[in-house]
Amino acid sequence: MKFNVLTIFPEIISNYSKESILGRGQKAGTIEIKPINIRDFADDKHNTVDDTPYGGGAGMVMKPDPIYKALKSLDAIPFSKDNGLNKLKKIFTGKLKAKKRTILLSPRGRQFDQRLAEKWSKYGELTFICGRYEGVDQRVTDHMIDEEVSIGNYVLAGGELAALVIIEAVSRLIPDVLGNRDSLLEETFGNHKSSLEISNLKFQIDKEYPQYTKPSDFNGWKVPDVLLSGNHKRIEEWRKKL
Ligand code: SAH
Image (cartoon, rainbow, N blue to C red; front, side, top):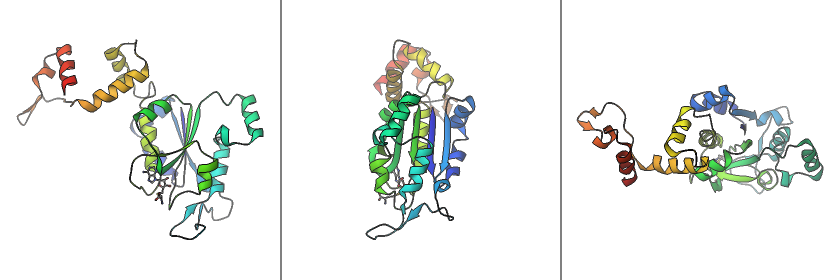
C-alpha cells in the first residue's frame, strides 16, 4: 500500500515514518510512505505556495496551483473530478484497478475513526494534502479531492500530524505490517472470521480490558489472580465482564 503526503515539511513525515512499525513496514515493502514537497511544484523563483486571502482577513492561504500540479504528477486527482480525456486514459492503462483516495486534512472534515481506518486499509493508494497557515484554497476541496477528513475537534498548525495519525492507524491493519500480532489474532478468533470482524472485535476488546505484564507484584500492587491462572476460559470471561 502506498501513502503519498503533500506537505511543505516533508521531513516531518519522513522522520516519523522511519521508526517503529512504519519503518519496519517500509523495509519489508508492505507499505511505502512518500512525502512530496509542494514547493517543488511552485512556478516562481521563490517557490511560493501561499498568498493573501481574497476578500481580506488575517493570515495566508495555500495556493491551488502547486497542489494541483503535485496531485497531477501522482495521478491522484479523483476520477470523478478529472477531465474526460484523462478518464479514458486511465481506463485504457488499467489504473482504475487499485483503489485510490485523495484526502485533504481539515478540522472541518469528516471525523476519522477506526471504521474508516478499516476501510482504507483495503485500498491501494492514499494521498494526503497537508494544509498550513489559515488553510487551503477552496478549489482544492471542490475539484481535486475525494474527501476532507479531520482527526478531532481541535485546530492544529498543519496537516502533517493528522496525516501521520491516519497512516499509522491504517498501516497497523494491513496484514504483515504488525508481524506476529496478526497471527496471534487469528489463533484467538479462528480463521472463520473475516479480517474486518477480527479487527473490530479486537478493537472493542483492546479498548475495554486492562493489560498487565511482569512483575505480577509491583510495590504490593498485584495482577488479578485470574490472569495468572492459565485458564483461558476464565480469563476471557473476566475480560468480557470488565
Ligand atoms: N483556519 C483554519 C485552520 C487551519 S489550520 C480553520 O479555522 O479551520 C492549518 C491546517 O492544519 C489545515 O489546513 C489542516 O490541513 C490542518 N489541520 C488543523 N487541524 C486539523 C485537524 N483537527 N484535523 C486534520 N487536519 C487539521
